[in-house]
Amino acid sequence: MCKVHFFFVGSDMPAMKFDAIEPNLKRARNTNGSVSEREGDEDRLSDLPDCVLIHLLEFLTTKDAVMTTLLSTRWKDLWKRVPSLRLRRTDPEFRHMTLFKKFVNKVLSFRDGSVPLHSLDFCYDGLIPPKLLIRVVKYAESHRIEQLRLNIDSGGIELPPCLFSIQTITWLDLSVPNGEALGLLPKFLNMTALMSLRLRRFAFSAGDGEVVDPFSGCIKLKTLVIEHYVVKVPHILCISNVTLANLTIHSFPFHSKEAYEIVLSTPSLCSFAYRGVISQKISSKSNLPFLEEVNIDVPKSVLSSRLHSPFILISWLQLLANILSKIPDLVNTESPCLDNLKSLIVKVQKFRRPEKLHKAELQLSSPRIDGAVDFLIRNSLFPEVTIVDY
Image 1 (cartoon, rainbow, N blue to C red):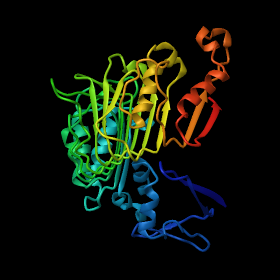
Image 2: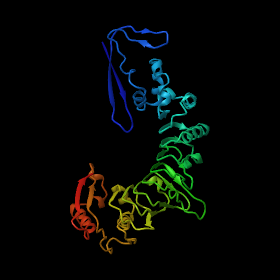
Image 3: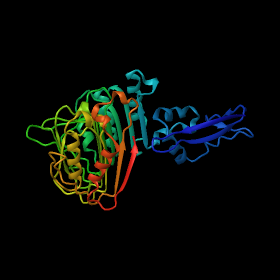
Image 4: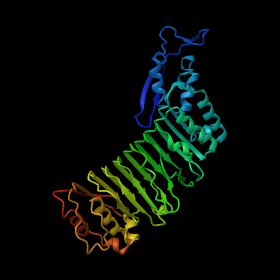
């Protein structure tokens, strides 16, 4: 006997393995095209109900799901009813743009239009043809898409406006590949059902005299992640949203050539995480009464190379503690009022080649770390402090 393994892998679920035993017996094909089983030869997988088989196909890329039509007529139309699509040009078989374009057009044409589209994962390696992108977006809109991931290079032009007015999307992930031109966002996102949004390698901009405020129309937004971004004229990014609870920002030096300001208007914010360069100002139009968790990760090399970064970092902590004030000098600053601080984790970066350290870095010792920790927790009641190697 020959043992055959089927692996179904999904992005949000662990790999599932199904075993089937295929005896070395010849199968007889009926006149209707189905495969008849001889004694001891059972196709148990095909005997499963349609709903189970369709669910299993959700763990495959759309190309692999379509390939199952070669198994037997039992599988011929099952892929057409799968409520999710995973269209990825990264597959070696789609190295030529025309092949992938034809495949996508056929999938959208032959898929059962009566089946709602729950999720779409679309990845295009290279500059995407505008007509193809528009067709994919309009198909998603007309089939009441709920979860959408686009990893595309739009050539630095603005994405189709219809994308940001789809009223059924609850989860949206937009990213531009590394090394390509940054994507452009519209001034305003009119997505009333959106609850989770991730933006990677995008530019925020507005007209003269206007403030970049794209998120205020997302009235159900709970989670926002912004990575590797640029804020163009007028260099003010306003994150205004009354329902936003979790905010994560990643910013790095090559995207921070010009100074800009982040203005928060997020009264429901519970968690704030920041990683990268801290050279921009931050302010808030509202208090943060529900803020419970703050995670700020600034590379030590960045702090060493930017004179004011430590002072800006302390001012950020003051802001997140509902004290809206600037700190011109760390020495003359009163203790930050982090009254509600419960946990503080300090990561100390280790270096393998001490001989290459700057003089200031060589002087970094435990007493300095302890002094900084004492300064931060001075007004806190019994906070949990952890110092770990990084």
